[in-house]
Image (cartoon, rainbow, N blue to C red; front, side, top):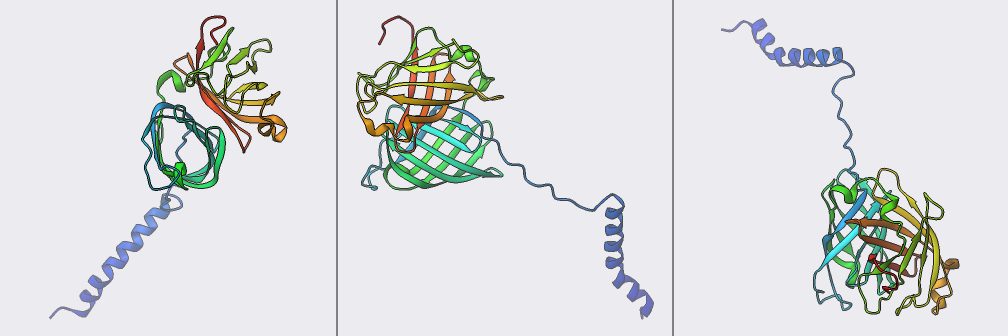
Length: 277
């Protein structure tokens, strides 16, 4: 027969071990601490190898996949676009761990078509952003942005933006957005101007603005005031448009500007000869 005192000792043994373990942890400090999860940082330029898969206006017929999707992300705001489709998304978001959520405004052919569209997705820092759009038509679908590697996400370099000639729109004959000129007369922050365009709602618009480099990124903020436009509707909000600029491969300029109702966005290539427009 097992003595009663021995049985009691074996019964209490797990409790004693647990108490000793707790005391040991207290001796090491404040006990076990669970470190908070760090939030991914999506800041940067996302090159033109991404894609967007959305619906036509009837919300049932898929559009063809646009595989030139690119974007710029900074301080909780993003601008992403398909230049060939003249389709732009501008929004704000918050990050929790590797997840993000927010809302987006959709612009088609330079005109706002939907706003406050729900947005959610995932960030793989330094690699990609994938997301889902919860609206209708062009705001119903999924997208992927691919983070640009190397110099395309290196430090800003004003020499990459300032050109003695101009920037020529890549798409459209004639283009629906103006040629751009960037002068270094007020270096290190240059003026930003444009010649008249050949077609589109921004026909005969003049604008001038300023480019500001964003430290520790490959991005620039830009603020523009438009004037003398044939279409007076686009001059709402006193003709002021704001957005982001980046440069890819030293000879491609990516621009996204909006005033909330209209979108002035596109990709430009360096104009290497006088009168190329």
